[in-house]
Image (cartoon, rainbow, N blue to C red; front, side, top):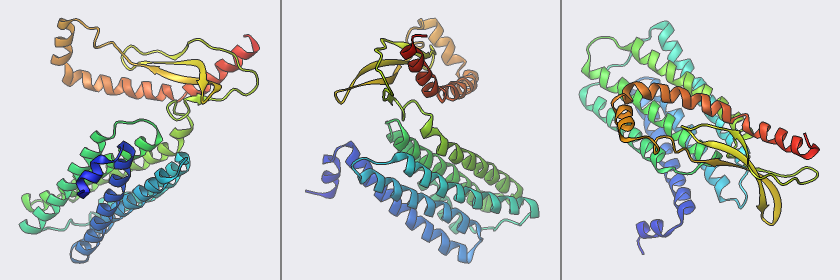
Length: 305
């Protein structure tokens, strides 16, 4: 049996484990390659290579956690987020140094620039594929998607630097440094938030154990949204033990629209996408309070308030 058949004969989690290992090796090879390029060009490739190296280490941490029977995803999230925060800091420091001191960008010839851009596009393509292929929810998939997202973004910066170096004769130092600084800042803030999210996310804390007496709860809504879906609390048996569980109802707002309304939404999609992103951000922030609200509700029900 070929390796490809063995791969596809694995279950979903088995394929994810293999992907993590392969992407870790890929990022390690890219890091080494960028360190070698940095010897002949600029320190930027050391900075970019460190991002790949941290990605490789992070994926190995996730792989190691996944291979355990009961992975401690909160611990894995803390380790990975800490590693990526350090990677973000060194990325920001280099970009700000370039921005403040106006360090002139390295100019690459057409051949080297095309090779660098090709590597950047390869990173970008693999990162996008990884984002689209991850369909699960919770800490494990959230970490993977976040790593893939920032692999894609830093790959765009790398590609921009390479293409502008041989396609535009003007000095693009400010543009490259500003773009890199913004990416680094967003990356830093995101990984700081990633440390906190597992303790508040309703997906990671969907099962709540009863503290004292168990009170049956039929269905109590915690958060309502016609666009993004409703969260509610109910009691049920889980592994033959009574527990409280936070569940989510799928949104049916768009499927319930008539054909005229759907066409209007499509025509105004370029404007509505920004409204949708804003509302999605507000909705996500509200979900971080759901676990606390559920515990308060359980306490109120237990004392008869």
